[in-house]
Length: 132
Image 1 (cartoon, rainbow, N blue to C red):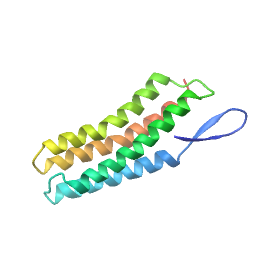
Image 2 (cartoon, rainbow, N blue to C red):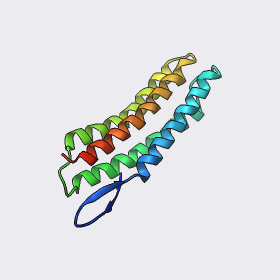
Image 3 (tube, helix red, strand yellow):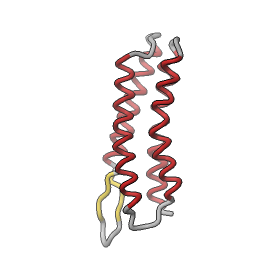
């Protein structure tokens, strides 16, 4: 969540980081689904793709928690923090499950984990926009 100031003390979320996060997650999910169609297992390139998604999510979480701590308006802090933490956990959980699944469905689980990320990012934006 990158923010800019508009007016007197009012901050709004600039859609750069959420857009990048969604794009990276969808790209990783696409790659995972391509591996499903090719009947391939979860491997190092898919680990790297999931790692990139997780790195972007980590940046988003740090920025989100900083903005939450300095918010000039009421935000539903527990809900916002919950979505931030869930977004950090969903890709590693899917990746772990995908690594344990030794069939073509391993990458499918990783794809589902990556496709949950855009939903969580959109919910983060809704919670932030709603205020409190």
